[in-house]
Image (cartoon, rainbow, N blue to C red):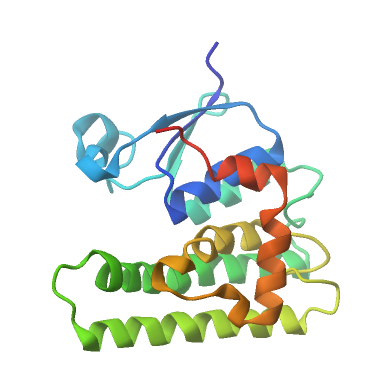
Length: 213
């Protein structure tokens, strides 16, 4: 039996953000792999869902919403399905706006910069020292910012307030791939503890394996 929620994705740092959150929310959903290794995301059938031709994309037939961009998807799921705010904060509260700030910081800075580092360090056939140094330096700077953010929160090792939120989930997808750059997240003590604690949550572990390839 098909479910109202259908996730089109691939197990990348961006893709697993959404599958992790779906698992943490305990929602029933179907997941279809979109193989970015063969540019399946550029095929007509997928571009009809997402004109940008990028994964992930979520279709919610119960509300008529088709949505892409991980920050938008996480916010949509929080607004629609996290009514008790177990993984988010109520709109209008100081925590809500700080959560929004760090969500945007992740999708606007952390993801793009680390993605460029991945490209030049891991995938580019021509190794360009200037590009590698530039992006690795900025990746380390950004994780230093996150270390500072965690250090300022006297309520626990969360980016915001007294529990994990979509800001943490957004970051985790990329923090989980730092090893590709030969960077140990435990270089930053608070981030290391934050990462280890999140990694132990069953929903996080399950979401990292979605979709099945």
